[in-house]
Image: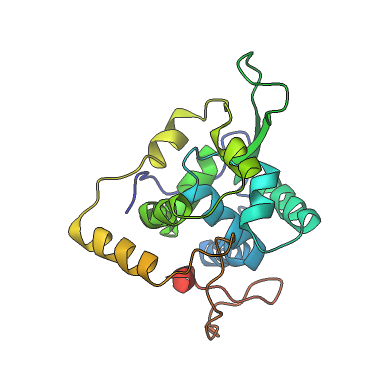
Length: 212
């Protein structure tokens, strides 16, 4: 499932690819990008964003969804921002209540094109279904429903809920049937045997299909 099409080169405000340069072979750039995206915490953060009904996630929501502590999540959000895969978006409108969140994290245009290249966008429908079937506390539900700033148009379009074919509907049904929703975590599936060909820079091995 791909809602965005072009192969990423580098962010428009950067002279070089965040994962390489003119003196780096394309295959090495791809290896670095793959390792970066599949590191365990960043992998979970990306899935949380792809599955979020508003496509913009607060730090409290990340802490609720991702099985890592707040400081670790913040550290990896900063790393994703440094690579220009994600950015912090701030709501500056007047419609929010004083207690509503105003800072959110979401994908950039470059991040969307990168994730499309590695096949992440095809799982938007499944990840969205998983989040829609999670138990939410009152606080997290309030965060999820809070007013948000506008995303760049290409990011918003890429994360629109796609039309579901029969195979995707069956996959969603199978995933939901296999999950227990008594807990509050999104990523509570049991660990699987790691793929030795997918090794991340922090030693974690997280193939894209692990959640499924």
